[in-house]
Image (cartoon, rainbow, N blue to C red; front, side, top):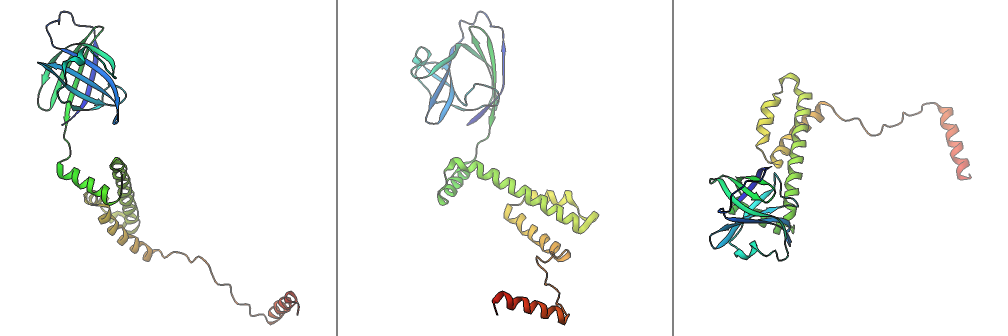
Length: 233
């Protein structure tokens, strides 16, 4: 389950929260990179969130953590302690949560919103695609961006050529809505058809033109003599 930090605000510290459960916020780096571990006391263990990124800030993505021992409240191990204190849930719904962190110098409000994750079938299809093409799965996001850019450019070219061919009769809004739901391959087929129409309507200029024949007998003779001189005849 994925969550996103949609709001983080800070206010003056709240007094008299000694009965609330404890929390600690650690900055940590492992093989997956720098992240923040927000650990929340829950009975005999710690629950909480792993927040990706260099900073604990609005817009970061988070995943729920597995239970951890409570000694993290006292020990930092190889992590850096950023904030500690008491906490309270203001809202704890299935898709939205709001947490109050009562630190020594401020009360921080953190709002989480649930983000739907890809299905198992989708993840498997992506991993198989990466394997079949000998790709690192971390490159898949960049490939998706490249594909979206290529499709956007193909649609723009399709509309530009169609406007040139059909003028006011071209329904650009309708075609864009239709093409938006197609794959790049499908858009490419329609673009090819339009390019063929355009080339027929506007044949390209030849890259070279034959020189006109010289019908002047004396001029031909002069050129022949010059050629013989060059050859040393």
